[in-house]
Image (cartoon, rainbow over all chains, first blue to last red; front, side):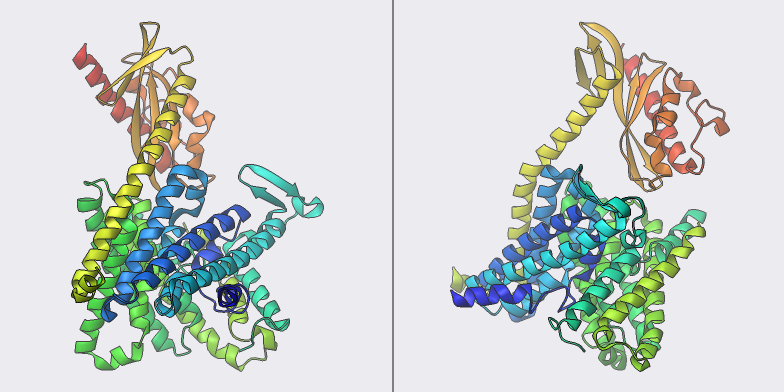
Length: 204
Length: 191
Length: 177
């Protein structure tokens, strides 16, 4: 059990995929503009990560060596498509928001990376712990960035059609650059530097 | 014809793959300081983007749409891209071994480059015809190469500069990307 | 079972994986597809009822809705698709009779926000109300519809789609009468 917890905790802080390993940046930066998108993307990534880790780990002893990457990719692509179909049917506005970034989860280095580096070499239970840890680590990272970008960048926080709150001063004069594409780079760069400064991450 | 040029310019500058669409970031942040390597990488990615766009367009038009299975596009496209990269890799290995060793693992990594899968999916979303898809892929690839080249030059300066310890490496690269992104948004006036 | 898997050639293994994957996807789609279809249908019906408030029932044949209020025919409706600047524009067109437009509603579009996306605004769409099919064209092309400034492609896509499909549907209506 402690092994499970250890693998799980690793993904959240020490090996946080976004802030430490700098993986899976594409969807992170693109979908970090609003809380809703961040949560949607996190759910998708967590689901795909979990399913693909389980499947890859289960078939790891039978996959011929040269076919590993193609097989992993097909497995991941299948789960991504399932999420795509389900979102399209039951969460249409989220599906519209995520756009092409949802199918792009298939080439998200995080998922393929975990399949290759961990799931293909470890038993299923450990792979589940790994997936959960990394998935939640990703969710934390993208949500933090989204909260910063949405609250400071638009002055308010929305979830679906509801505005949760609007800040007094920022509501009228938000730091708009944060909502722009360039703002994503700014936030993640500063956050990364901050984490290094306080010792959570290592300097280069 | 002007429509094709507009598509090219939009994909290269206004909708720049790295700075605006956030696609192809891995090679961007890992780009070498040598300009020639950056340009070769960009050229290779552009080449794959164009060929992949053509192949996936044909598959979409003649297989996916008639059989009503457009939702299979993610799986099919990534398989096509993986095979294409494999073929190109073998071809380069046989014809120009020096180039092959220079690329190293980065050639195989083009498969997971969001920019390649990204352009093939984008072509479907925008419902481009074959010619438009090719121009979009060319524009996207050229824009990608451009930013890669600029970054490789800046990388060199960054190494020599005196950044705070926590900022060294990735963080400062992100901030540079932000500045580049802001600069590129000035291109919005062209169209 | 495991022995069988081990003996497969690499290519056969990949093919097997792909087959399993495709099957899984087809099964999933059989569940989600109808949900998406139903939502689209509901959207069309909602818009149709908005356009023809008195409608009580309708017939649907050959992609054409014939609408009735208590057995009295009050009009027709059909879908049209235009090739916009940024992909497909999905349109619902209502006809009062075989000649006059009752209304035009944009069901979905992905045009440039603030520019082409303004084709969904009442100012643009209301121009179609009561217009004879023959007069549907942009004013710069001799018709009665003013295009949106800066969004000629999007405007023209809607106009062309409405006109072309309307003419086809009228032929269809007159062919069955």
